[in-house]
Image (cartoon, rainbow, N blue to C red; front, side, top):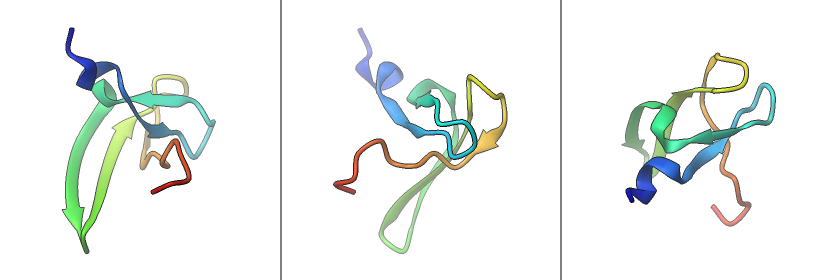
Length: 56
């Protein structure tokens, strides 16, 4: 099983739903920070997921 596809990329800033890594459209690093845009499976908007935990 590929856990990368089932891990969460973060939470949708619009509706709060969990955004799985499988929904990531683009991922890159800028200023030593991982950034991404993904499609929210709940509200179907393209969003920049917020980290799921507060440690990052």
